[in-house]
Image: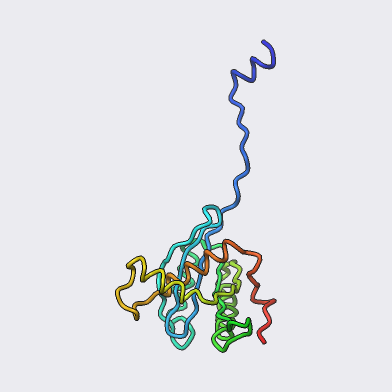
Length: 173
C-alpha cells in the first residue's frame, strides 16, 4: 500500500488552534447603581447582564459582585472611566478609578486572579438611552439603562482592547 493510500484510509486530524475564550465583565460605574454586561472575546459580542445597587460609589454587596466574577469565570473586568469630553479626569472618573483599585484589591484578597482595567466610556450612557428608546427597551426617560451602557462599553472595548489601561498604570490628573 502506498503512502497516498494510507493517508486516504486514515483520518488526518489537523486542528487549527482556536483563540482562547475570555469572558469579560463590563461595569458602568455609578454612585447609586452600576450597570453590568457580559462579553466574550471569541464571539466578540456583549450583552446586558444586571444592575448592581451601589452605596455612595461602593457596591452595597461586595460578596455578590465577587461571587458573580467567580461563578461566571470572568477572565477580565473592564470598568468604565467617565472622562470629560476634553479627555480630562472628572470627579466621577476619579471615583471609578478608586473603585477599580478597590475591586482589584478585593479580588486579590479572595485569591481570584482577574485583571481589572479601565476603559474610556464617554457618551455610552447617552448612546444607551437613545438605543434603548428606539428599540422599545424603556418606556420612560427615567428607566434604568446602566446595563445597556455597560454593554456598549464592552463592545467598544472588544473593538479596541489596546485602549484599555491597567489600574496600576492609569494616571488621573
